[in-house]
Image 1: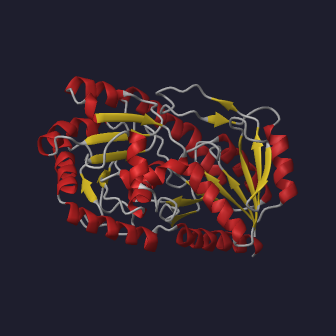
Image 2 (image 1 turned 120 degrees about the horizontal axis):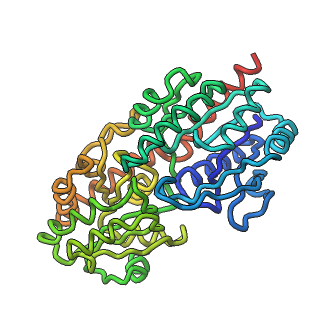
Length: 396
C-alpha cells in the first residue's frame, strides 16, 4: 500500500501522538509499504527528510502562543495561502491508497481530509486528545469549537475513527455522532522494549537521591489535564507512613499549580521538579523509581503503559475498564483510584511503597499485559488490517 501519515505533531517535537505516529509510520515502512509523512515545521528540523524508509515533508507553520486556552501546549498550524496548492500537488504526486490522520482539530487533518474526499481516498483518523479544558470558562469555548469547526469538517470528510480507550469512546459518541464512517477499537501502542534495561544508580544520581530513598516518579509534561496537584495533595498522608519519600516530576512544566500547592502544604522539599529530559534518560529514571504515578485526566495514557512495560508498579487515577478490549485488574496490574479521590490515591501510594513484594508482582504482571496487548507490533497489525480493508473498499 501507499500510505500517507498526517500529524501536526511529529518528531523532533515530543509528545504521545508524535511518538506514536512516528512509530506507526516507521513500522508501516518496515512492513514494505510506501510511506509519506506530512507534518508541520518544528524547530530546526529539515523541511524534507528521508529516514527509516520514510519521506517526511514538514510544511511551513506558525506556532500559537503557549496559553492556558491552548492547554498550555505549543501548537503549530500550517495554514497559509499556499497550503492547498502545495499539499494537493504533494498528495497527487504520491497517489496514496489510504491516509492515516492523527488529531481531529489540526489544520493538516482538515486539509488532507478535503483532498481525500475529492480524490475518493479513504481516511483513518486517530483521536489522541479530547477537546476539553478543566477550567470552566475555557470548557465552553472548547465545546463550541468542537461543535462549530471539528464536527462539521468531520461530517463532510467522514473518516473512520480509531478509538483507543473507553473515555474516548464516550467522547466520540457524544461529540461526533453521525460524522464518521465507522469506529475501530485499537488500544494505544507502545514500544514495549525501549523503557526496559535502565540503570537504577544512574537514574538516582540524576535525581540526586540515594538508593534507600522511596521514590515516586511522575512522567509526562505538566499541563492542566495532568497537573500533578492531586499527587502533591496526597503527599502529607503518604509522608505519615513513608517519611522520606520523594516525588520526582519529569516533564516540561507548562502549568505550575502543583509547585504552588506544594509550597502551601509545606511539602516542597519532597517534590523534585526535574523538567524535560532527553528520551534516552527515561529508562534510567524508570529503573530508579519505586512507583510511577501521574494524572492523565481520568484515563490511562502512553506514559502509564511505558512505565508498566518497564515493570515499574503504577498508581493511576482512572478506570479499570479504560481499554475496552484489554481488562486490567486493580492491585493485579496496577493500582487504580477514583480521579480526584486524594485519600485513596495516598493509600494506594503507601500500599505500593511499603509492600514491596506485592508491588514487584504487580510490576511483573503489568509488564506481561503490556507485551501481550499493547506492544507496538500487535497494534501495527491491527492498524494495517484496517488500512488494508479501507484501501480494498476503494478498489472495489
